[in-house]
Image (cartoon, rainbow, N blue to C red; front, side, top):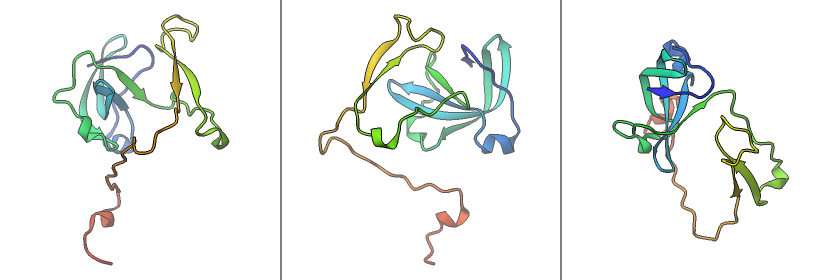
Length: 145
């Protein structure tokens, strides 16, 4: 079950679900987020939904799967209301300060805090791991072309 401050969810057919609909990010542990998709969304009360027909560990987040997901976890609906930040390519690498807080409050509310972002990295402080993914059937073949 999830409680939404704003917005709505609705049940979708399999084809729409497999196309990426009803995606949610769930914080399974502090700073660890799993992407889940729900095929069925049953409205129980205003803003409260029971989600079933779940696709878990989507978009490479299977390592973040909790069993079950923790009660009281933060949830973010990944839909068109999320916007790309207007940052020009020339501004990449420049330190920024963003104000972060609950969507239910105004940006001027005291619950918002300034958060520095894009701090320079020290060589060797970043590890990148890659898991190859493709939806093409031929991509999973080990045969030589």
